[in-house]
Length: 403
Figure 1 (cartoon, rainbow, N blue to C red):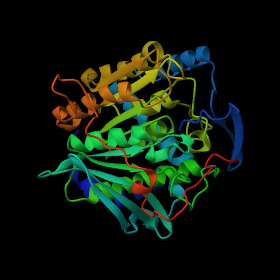
Figure 2 (cartoon, rainbow, N blue to C red):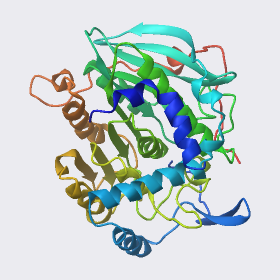
Figure 3 (tube, rainbow, N blue to C red):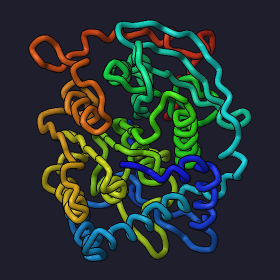
């Protein structure tokens, strides 16, 4: 999982050159049209939205994609096209270079000392007037370099179960910090404390992916972060953010998208499928291949029987596993499937993720085990929304999913 140190040290410049060279998640709340067209220059490009394919059509598409490569080298060429399509389709190539190298200014809110970890409320001004609000979870004590994990959230919008403040976000962020990682849980654009964006902006995918890149910039800049051990994990729309950022940014070493990777479903929100990242005039792919483009780096998929990941064991995972076989890296890909569960990042789903991340990031797995060797989160204390806010007096976005 080692990366070229020259690339890391000149990341901002190299990313911009990459964007120039190229020419340059999930929403269950409402139904979406599966086929839309947008003008892309002089051509119309069809967006792949929601249930864009039937389950049968999706299986056939995977067969067509698989026929385009036969070994690791040929897959790598296809993966490069996938990255190019995302960068161009999301218009990341149109973001000015200065916005990738602008110094990140940090506003620090309250800091909480907890049992084996700390939580600090942060706002990152990633470019003038553009803020990412979130929480930095750190081990209570540590020495030397530690891994970093990004934790984006999905489209849960109820006041009692909202964004980065959700219990599952706090449980996993705190538990991973207790295991020895620096964890940043952050707002989607137009969610939580992000009052500067509209989540339903037609360019939401562009802005949200840009935020992910800049969060990586910040985490990589911390002198205690090991830049060879960086992971990302999120559920639903956060799962989409997970595999998109892992696909385009080489600094991600481990990817764990939860309840999102599907061959027939492409994401129902504009932040997932509102721009032409899956299909162009001369190329077509899906979220299965986007997730696999990180190969041979570690990848874990988590699915359940109640949503679009219901075919994970029979359809999506075998396709990705074959790609890892080409790299002789089958030990780096895994899945956890819960046929009787629903669309969430619940405790049963978090348990295998803790083990996978511990194995691949060299975390202390014992920190989440009880006296009987079973996973526990009893040492995590949930904080209320006010306690996690960077700006306690500021009202949060109340209805981020409006049209």
